[in-house]
Image (tube, rainbow, N blue to C red; front, side):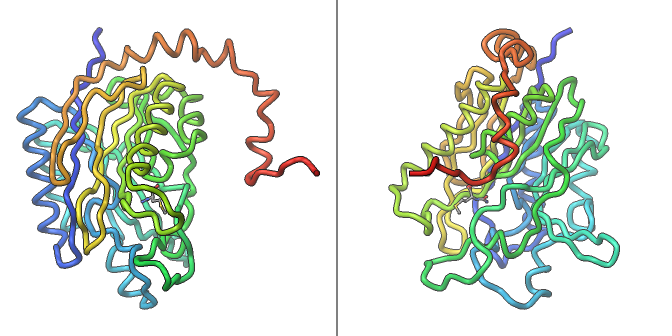
Length: 312
Ligand code: CDT
């Protein structure tokens, strides 16, 4: 039986602060309808797909911060997306800021959920690699305060059996880390979905703008090849509140090749027929993990976070 899944990668152009959830959901619906017209069974939306990328601002009023979060999903603004996707028989990945109540604690996660073609939520992922900084750094032209506003995800990197395959999720900065792919690779992932908001200007170091796109592609292409998995990456792109976010949404084959790529910084849908069986040649040859991995020599990877060079 063929395991070809028609996947849509739904890039979003910028979302400004004044844009309401209702307006944004209308844009998601327009992309969903395009995806339906092109035969998609699964659509990947970006990280934080319902709001602007608010960690660029230093805020101290918790109510103001919480206004960027969702305390339930679906909710009044997004129910229509869930209903329409179910009616059309399209599953989706959706990134959003999640306000969770755990006992008497309020937790803030940068989350993504996966909904299947029947409208059932299959899984949730909470971002683990939170980039940026926790304190106000007024010398920066804009902030990147994910470490301030979010808690580190507590769900690990699970994979799920869905869409006739083994699928996993991660979010933005996670894509730069080989551990993200390998932990899911060790669970047989065949399709890895992710959304991202990547500022073109990196205030932390001096680097040419083109490095942003190079590092974006190079890490995902390597992760795809080294784990024999498809990768679908959806950007929020363009000038958001004066801050340029890179585009570069793409679909990457298990060979590491980019098979579909965005060429705008706006709302744009990429479509590809993803053959999940195309993962098999790599998983059974050069990256046959059971045959070739040597975990007894990889202990440092889980024992140590920071690098410790040998003594002088
Ligand atoms: N959203 C997100 O994770 N963005 C980061 C920016 C890194 S620079 C502080 C990224 O990895 O694209």
